[in-house]
Image (cartoon, rainbow, N blue to C red; front, side, top):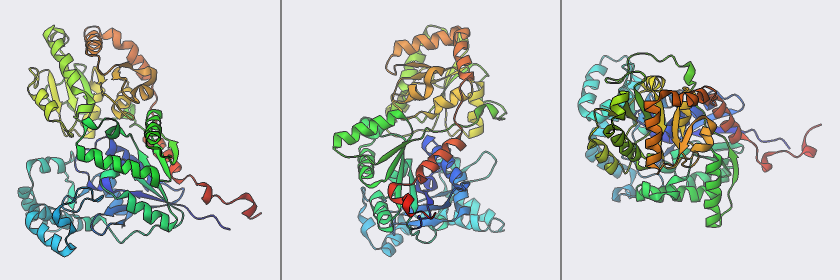
Length: 483
């Protein structure tokens, strides 16, 4: 009996939909998908989920490379909800009728995607400058900002047909990997059914289950969707890949509470950019000076605990610490969800725009500069399944004050100072001391200099190897092997 040939299948749906600088989850997907594109241990295929015909579709290597690089973004906002949790009345119409309606109510977005498709297929066309002027007029200011790239090029917003090819038929021996926020962009129940009928295996990478643990930090609709996905995945997936011991314990506790048995678990920590080898140079954003600012990198959302830092900063301004040290506090990150209260507090903060700065839509080069030239970094998040920014701060050799929330102490280890994320007085004392007595943080800079980050290449390779690890029914018994 010959063993079945394994094939790695990586779904790119969430990444294909993304527009703008990547947040943590998208960065993980890009690194691991890039590792898959270079993987030689097995045949590799890429897919996207078509929410109209409700099938996985093939993605060519060339298109996959463009998706992974962030060169194109597939606009599927006018397509049905993939998991069919949130249904609009016209989502049940025949496709021809729904498309006709979309041509009327979403005409602007459809025109943008059609121009993007034309530009991608006809980059040298003399007609293109005219179309790009129309595209620029059609786009809202935020869309123009998100599509603009540091090198002057543009991200092309394209229709689904540009990235999706023929239906992808799973076959025996396929190991299909769903990553991170695919919970909002695919139908895991349908995909699992197809996988099982084909004799393929379904592997799910989960960074955390925080929306289940702390639903108050998320929109109710997203909590419902995420919870349904995870609970379905427990029964449908053949294997989970988890990124920390904390997430593993959280998953075991959640499954036990439901009386469910988890699939096979594999722990593979995340990677980190090779920060110390970075050659990023150039000026810092206006108003910032080397060694004169404290850096907090994070999406703005309630869980990240910007509120604590705003309270601490006000105290440090009032007692003269900030003026004495000539320091600024810099928030770097785009706005997430449930942020109205956080943004209102930020924008009304007495020090906002002066010693308290928020930078949005920061590209990788500028982010590297900000890390390199910061005095030290902070990360007060209430809970994390891993925590990439504190790892990145250590990789840059920066002294770090982080929280004890979730897996942060696990990934930071002895290399940073971890404080209770609710201890305002503790954070105030530590930050005051690090500002007024730089020599105090020297020992943490020395510890950070000894920190060795796992490379994304290593993390990606180990994740793909964990994805492809054979299951018992795929291993040929010794007695059946040819002598």
